[in-house]
Length: 51
Image (cartoon, rainbow, N blue to C red; front, side):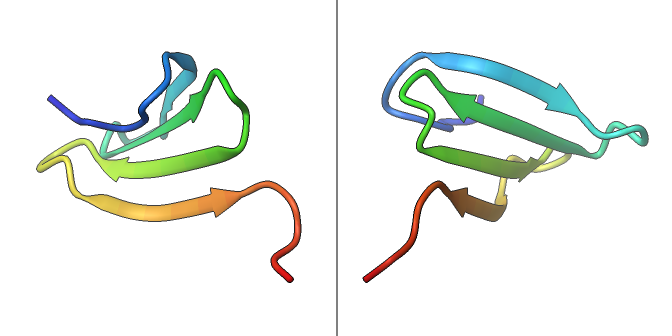
């Protein structure tokens, strides 16, 4: 089990090799990429600009 987001998922997708999993929350502020093998978080992309 991967604890990806606090809110419900809006989208989920695997890469072509099946080794990475991308998720987007219902809030639409974060996209996270996890290893499908061990569940570790590999990347996190946030919407907007940090100030």
